[in-house]
Image 1 (cartoon, rainbow, N blue to C red):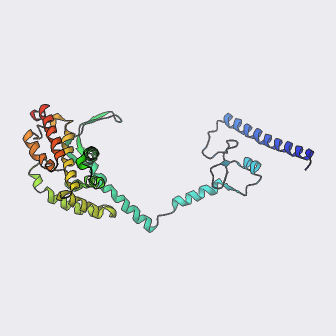
Image 2: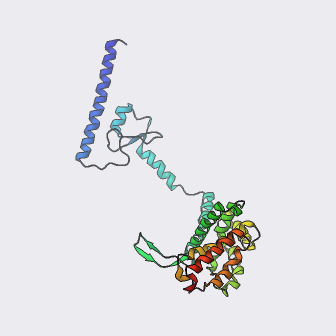
Image 3: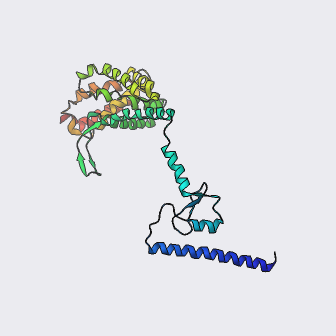
Length: 300
């Protein structure tokens, strides 16, 4: 190709791109005049409603720009065809296996009932979203959460507990009060009701194991047995954490102690047993009792 032909070809390309550029600007200005709202699928060249895209991409073009830019539409995908494919995928029914799996998954909602189980402890707070002061009870789910955080404190800071299986500890705490979904919470001060508490909870665990997702059927039974037998180091630790959490939580509510029967004698009798196995827990419990005494919790 000679120089003259090359120059002519360059001039033709310049004219073509100038034409596209002018068309694009004209369409943009028209859109502004008409106050056309930009749509999700719009031409990346001129901003008009798109009809085509490059297969496998999200770059969209109107028909005019697609022809001018690509020369033809053979290698492009039409918007209607692409949306039809998406719509078909959405309407595709679950297979029998998918339906079975999802129904099993939905059984997890049984565990969410722990959020609605009230304990004897208070949990008052101001709800900034509703602008309301709530005076209510703590839930079992809230107790489990704070127990996990309390356990993490001791596991992370005290050498005595450095060799414990952390995952086992966390699992024991997560499952230790699941029975309350059926039995409700029986507080440590409710001495008469606690006489039948252990058997009631064992029965409840058996019922729950059949309601839980299949992956958790045997898990809840095994963990509940380990927690109540208090043989493994992890179960003894989890039990101590459960007791300690109840005390620490109520430090926020000095007015609760006397009316609920928590004088110094009862507090030591009801909670102390869980800490006797551990030097560390005995020291923390001793210091907590001293704090309660010195700050008048037992005098209210």
